[in-house]
Amino acid sequence: MAYQVWAPVLIAFAISALSGPVIIPFLRKLKVGQTEREELKSHLKKAGTPTMGGLIILAGILATSLVFIKDYPRIIPILFLTVGFGAIGFFDDYLKVVLRRSDGLLAWQKMLLQILVTGIFTFYILNFTDISLTMRLPFSGGKYLDIGSAAVPLLFFVVIGVVNGVNFTDGLDGLASSITVLVATFFGTVAVGTNSGIEPITCAVVGALLGFLLFNVYPAKVFMGDTGSLALGGFVAATAYMLQMPLFLPMVGFIYMVEVISVIIQIGYFKLTHGKRFFRMAPIHHHFELGGWSETQVVALFAIITALLCLVGLLAL
Image (cartoon, rainbow, N blue to C red; front, side, top):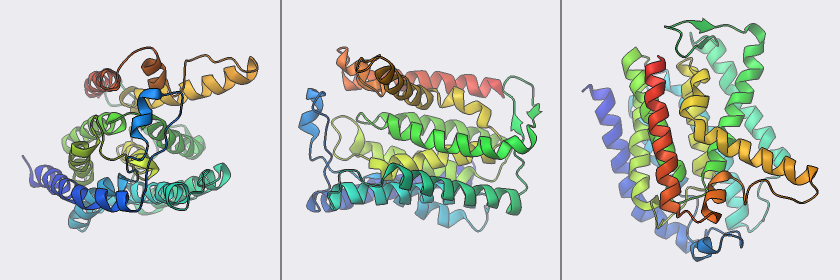
């Protein structure tokens, strides 16, 4: 196995695994605790569990990427979008859990920052890389779709949609981590197979998430918070575009998409029916919970679905 594959996995894993026992007590000391919705009685015992654990993930990704960035400059835009969205998430978390401002960033502030970060990413790949916005078609035998000037607005829609999809998915112990480590493994496999030059960062994300899962599986000792979920969303979206594979995201990122759609349906149905709910609770993982499923059952189901769809994604190449 090539050095640029196994080394980032091991380095990022070691950094995450070793930084967890340092960062988690620090977060606990700051009283950076999670609040839980009262409807989810099984979650009330989690109140006070440290959040902002995405710092552990980012430490592994950032430190490892910096080791390889000189020889693999194509990881720069992915690293930028990952850290950029992670910074937005960190600021939001900090306002909510440290400064006790319940809303964190206002919706318009968060959206404006997301558009700004996405705009810089778009400008960079269009002007400083040879990456085209043509998109590989699944099951086409290597054909690409060119939608011309519509590709840029689509990029903004996809990036912001994926980022918020990962954010909605982060609601159960180990759920977003488990889903994203599979998606990162899928993209890492494609990156290696196509010699794309982004292998180190995809492998670093795999290692960082495996290290984080040591503390995030049920019962979680720490939650990633928006710091982690927005960063991971940025990574997934940026990697898809660097590989010219955004059309594969509804497949390998199916769970992210379903989580977003469930929230949209719930809100729309609630407004149309003046207070009725379509799901027991949204995002949809809570619907399963309130239907009697345990957290570990939901996480296992969603992870299995993602693993199978990632295999289909490899076949679709």
